[in-house]
Length: 465
Image (cartoon, rainbow, N blue to C red; front, side, top):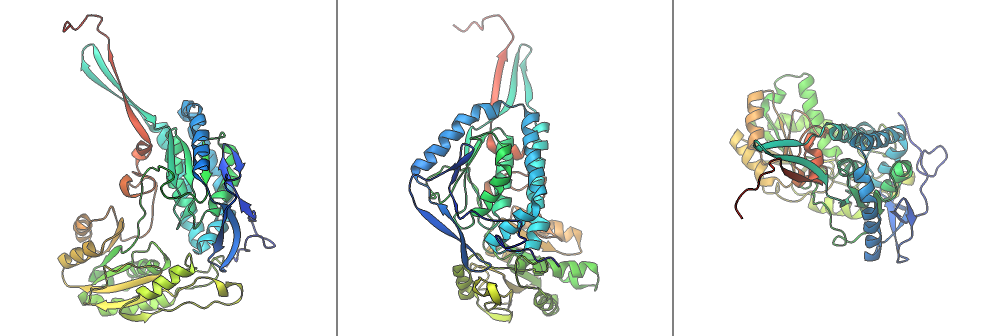
């Protein structure tokens, strides 16, 4: 067990500034309006820093800085630009613990998860995009014996991005890495709910990027910055468990129950509607309840903690208000002691819906899992698609043929099959509904435009005019 010290405390790897301005043209500047908003840690419920609230004038200043820097950044040789991304990845890796403390303190999520998943995935994204840049090639089409079309990928110029609130460092990396690799300069709007983590990152990598290449604004109104559109996975995301997962008391069964338990671990983005084949429903619910009760809830900065705090008191209230049906475990606020007493904690909750599927379409907040039963595979797919409101789903079965056929029929952009919550950089996820776009070599194309250079090598006139 490792218990990381809270920011600013003796032995801590991190100390926040009392206030943060906007990061524009390679340094901090004060907002044109002297207004600040508080950043509250869900771990303790206490304010730990303040950030400036940006105005339209601040947005124009950031865009002007990015515009000025764009030609030089786009003109850097791909290999050199890829080298910058690799150095960013190295710097993040070298400061892994400080960044993990920053994200945990601001989001309330367990530091074990941030250390083991979020930050390594973010590092991989920076390195993958650096490699994708080096591997990106144009194309050529022969129109006729004297005419050739050359195809290039060019940066868009200045792009606006928004960091997510649940995983600020990961979602920022998902976008920044391909946008910068593609040759763009960036104006990034930090999430108003979790903005300070981005500034910790800036303090570590700001010197690696030329001034104006990356600009960060706090407290930006939703309509004040044109951004490359994206959406997060949210709401009811279904998971289907076929009865064969309980056929043997073996590693696979244990892995399945672990996957179920992770639904509760992910306070905001878990796959929170579990659909279980009727013949295994009672046994599955019993085992899943035991597994959920074993989840360790406590100080998010403790590596033994499996589930931390929700982002705000409002999230806890909304989660409690949304709980409907038979609660078999949890369903109440989690009361912690000492400095954590003011934090925003909710017990991991399992609701047994059985054949009553009326509540599956209801919105969910927090570590709440509704378990419903289905008779046939067709029923499972129908229920999954009817309660679907995110970009991910899951299928658990020992039958690979059933897994394939079921996954193809679920209306989700990613279907985890016998696994859960991995976002490898080289696995595709549609750019329309994700932060980083397609996760393969095409990852840069969302932030580029196609250039067609049509060239005639025939000196003779066409003869039309």
